[in-house]
Image 1 (cartoon, rainbow, N blue to C red):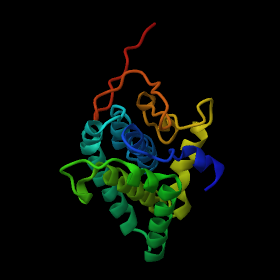
Image 2: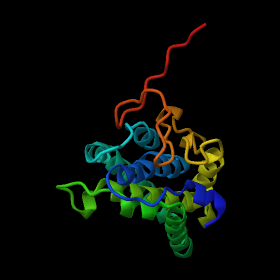
Image 3: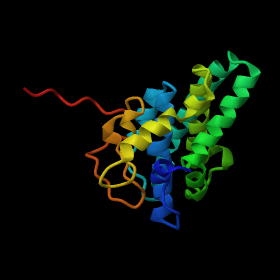
Image 4: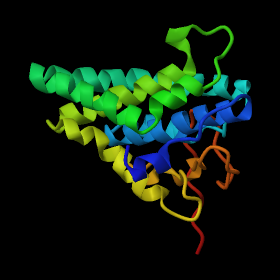
Length: 208
């Protein structure tokens, strides 16, 4: 893992708020970056604009947007992957897993709090993680370049440089709204008011 990737990875999780912030980072920052790179900007905005997650109720609230993103990413992967040669398809999938895991996606998924009443297949953290992987694989297959799976990561790393030395908004990774800005885990939120989870914000009225 290079220094840029280390800057993106959330801190080691503990319990309570720390675990929730791990999920918050995965669902509202990393996953939208990979979704936007795959052209799934609507799903990326919906996740990025979810309220900041600080408890298990917040994790559950993200569940619909996370599953919608996963379904869209799976469809994008099937569409792009079906037109790729077998060798390229496999290479894109392997590269996607590596890109997401190197960015800290798997660690954040495993550290995120579980939600009572949900199994592995419906867990919001797993949905967000696999949405990232499918989207990254779709990007590679679309561009016929397994390395393209890391384009969202590179954009996110570039944007993360600054006073916070952590994670800002994934807005540079394909147009995710800056209103969904996500601080690095453990840092206070600095974004203005957010739209309801799963809904893109209305544009502000123009002023002269």
